Length: 253
Image (cartoon, rainbow, N blue to C red; front, side):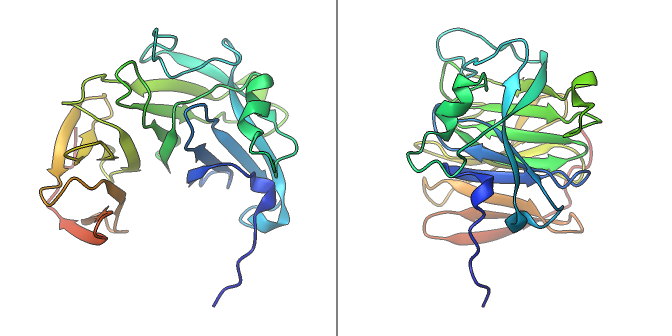
């Protein structure tokens, strides 16, 4: 048995997913709120999160404090890259659940229900379940700076791009968990009100249906590949089943 250790310096908020950048050991985090932040945690010691570190919020330099939901108007166009700055957050234990509000006051961007997140191939993808004017979801792509987390980061900042926002529930509805396939596609689990699917997204942003939940209307979750890439594991949340899907898979887009 392992004793639970609270990771207080990583922030108190409605945690959803994390992604660890293998190049730096930095931990990126999503928050399941309609006015959530995207967080970056820089540990004092790589891989030793309990030791402490710095918690920061993502700010779009050109649009401080922007609401990226695009519910009313297209504030953020698909495919445009924005330079990013990471702002330090304080009082990170946030007993009144105000961490996201503190970040927004400092110019951090707000996202509509940040959920699934995955690091791979030098980028970090994350999903916002209710983004877009149809509130059907968005997938974002963050490319870290070559000087991520250092004093030189402002020389070549990381970039953020709204990768896809279909606003068509026939194509994608309420994206949740995501992973990156060994061949480069993004694999997406839906958490919609009715039928739910596992979708694929090519590096060029083309959506395709990979599988569907023919058992019930429960959400699909936890998609991940085996280390050798031959098996995709995915869960049906209710009644609590884990499925193993074997290839051969398509290996290119």
